[in-house]
Image (cartoon, rainbow over all chains, first blue to last red; front, side, top):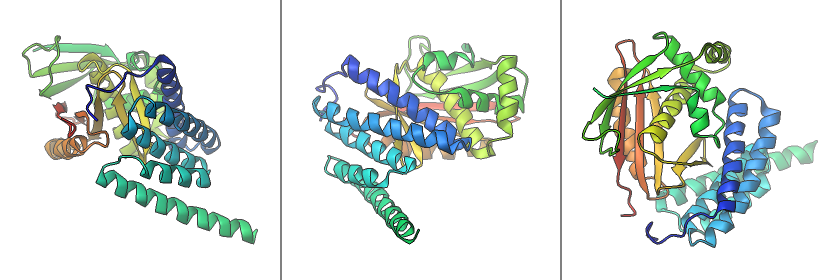
Length: 127
Length: 182
C-alpha cells in the first residue's frame, strides 16, 4: 500500500482517535501512578474506541493500520482485565497484513494472554 | 546559533488529545535537578528540514516552566521511579520538537506491549523518543532508536528523538529516516 494513494482520515474518525488517545494516555498515567481502579476503566474505554476505529480504517483501505489498531485494542483490553476479548482481537489482528516481526510479536502477546486467561479460569473454578 | 524558546506548559495546548500532565511534571522534575528555569538544550539535527531551521543543523532549545508546574513536579518525584521519569521527560521534549520543528500535527497513540507508539495523522510518519542521564550513551541510544524507528510497524518514515540530561549540558539528537514503504 503506497502512502500516496491512501484516503485521508474523515473528521468523525479523527474525533474518535482523539477521544481514544486521550483515554489511552490517561490510562497509562493512572497505571504509572498506581491508580489501578481508574486505569482499568480507561483501558477498557480506549479498547472500545480502538475496536471501532479498526473497521473504519479498513473502509479507507488502510488494512495494516486497522490490524495495528486491533493489536492496540487487544493490549488495552488485556490491561483492563478483559482477556477473552483481548485474545479474540489478537487473533483478528493476525489476519491482517502485519510484517513478519510484528506477527511474531503479536503471536507472543496472544500466547501470554491465553496463559493469563487459563490461570484466571483455574482461579475462578477453585473459588 | 538559532534559539527556540518555549514554556513547557504549552506542550499540553499543542497536543490537546494527549494527557500530558504527568509527563510535563516529570520533565520539570528532571530539569530542576540540573538548573533553574529555563533549561537549555543543544539540539543536533540530522535530515531535518524546516522553514524555521533553514540551512542550520543545530539550534538551542530553551524550556521554561512556571512555579505551579514546579510544585506538581515536587509531588510527582515521590511517586515515580527514576527510569520512567526520564522517559516521560524525554517524551515531553520530543513533543515540543514534533510540534515546533517537524510540524507533525495531530498525533495518535496506540498501545503495543509495554509501550506506546506515536504517529502523525497528518503525515505518514512515526515518532520514536527516548531519554538517558548518561551523556556518553547518547550516540548508542540514538543508533538503537533509529534502528527501531526504521523498522516501525507502519513501514512509514520515522523521526527519532533522544534526549541526554546531564550536568555537563543537556543534548538532544533529532533525526528523520525513510521508512521501508518507499
